[in-house]
Image 1 (cartoon, rainbow over the protein chains, first blue to last red):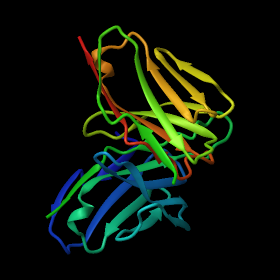
Image 2: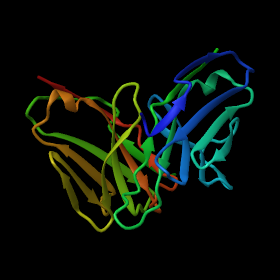
Image 3: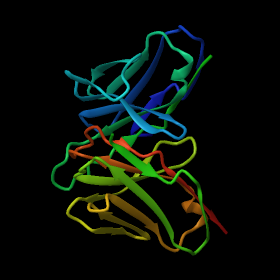
Length: 116
Length: 113
């Protein structure tokens, strides 16, 4: 089983609909992230969370909200989806730097969202 | 403004040759720089991290250099294989621990047999 699991993997929806993307992890990491990937733009940070009580906006948080339900679960919501939110969304986790930790991000397989 | 630039044009090389990918950045003073591999339809996978006080890091057929004066990192794959074909992402980690890691758009590498 994957360490970072995203659901759904693919979703097509209509403008104005509410959408939730879910992420769960078995790595035991405290830090979780939501990124968006668009062709030619690279990965951009939407929200990040250092623990259940800590939620922070990233570079492009407008139009999105998140919920950290538990250490292992971090959900991304689009309250009213619009076509320019069509993208590939990735959840990621990390450990804080320390010792031999590399600071690497562990990514899920992605959720492809299409807003018509 | 702060930017990370990778060659947007795909790199095509012959099997067995060395592939060299470039990552340039402006207005950052990163403590770390990371390289990831991404296959189509998959999430990025971490390859290597190099710290600001390191000039070079190697892992098997991979080599990364980091020049903080030129604000540039080079990523080399020696004895390239068709299985190395993928998109390679450069990422800056200004404060360590994966805090607000910033990514380049990536360079697509094609290795022909």
